[in-house]
Image (cartoon, rainbow, N blue to C red):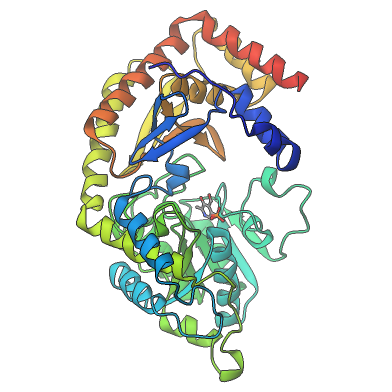
Length: 452
Ligand code: PLP
């Protein structure tokens, strides 16, 4: 099932008026294909080739692409010509969506602020934490990914994302993930309004919290008057097998940020769930009734899509499915990949899975690998992505850890698709370890990249 890359015909216009570098990059990786139809876990190109999605738009498509129930709900919403964005009324559906989200989240989270993206959710969490605590400092875990706005960028240790966009927010501090000592040292200064952390660090390389880390972090935050804010933008909505990853670790956050999969991959949407006291300390008078809001936040389509998405997640038991298929995926990957020296670890939770690679020991492999590193530290990972794409699978490496290939298919993926993915990845990894072609081809690509 080799995918032949036919540059999408509309690419030239896109390059002229939007982002030429993105077009160059996709062309270089032979991934600039035109998608005709996306259904469930399958992406069908204009040439009729089927590609299985193991990226899910970075955990957007938990319910699969274009789920019929969600599409129908959106068509119904459009058809009724209701108040989509009146800005002067009480939304008919926001209350119901908020109630269902809080019910599923539990953890004493009873109020919801809706927004339109994960980054916007992070911004709200920053403002609300500051207002509630009267402190300005913000703690975050190094290698985190929280988004693209200046507030979110200020909570990310990797300067790649923030360089040239500064200055960032003052008073932020990064500490290593899974390090309770450093967390306590910082919290004890009582300068911090919030500790913002992903329960499982996704772009850092699918890093799981050690033992009681999150529960103890919660206790420490409480002791020193700092709010615990969990960024569940990728991990939420059953991605890891539970509605929130927080549920695996029995941790009760003060705030949870959701986005991505919240609206079936069809309408931008985000939600910040929080405890009553946090919310009411922000909206504490008539004068402040809309002190923080956003034009598109409670729009009719996003709310309707959110409700339909929760229906699908429940009716199709996608949490259980994510747990079972995630275990299957990791089990099969371990069986097939453990013999290869460059495969360091397979890890994850539910259908958020990472395969970590490591530098080879054999001289025959080490020399080309080091040449790759000198060109770009992401080159090796991108060659894996390209190899998988040629075999009909869309994947990506982690944004803050280029040696980890992420596997996060829609939760509706089939066992057979998982088996085919494992076979394809084994084939790619075998090629890495046994064929010169892999390395020479990559060097050719790197040379072309330099010439662009
Ligand atoms: N938080 C996490 C963990 C993310 O992965 C992302 C985006 O990838 C964001 C926040 C930002 O979300 P958005 O792109 O919707 O602004």
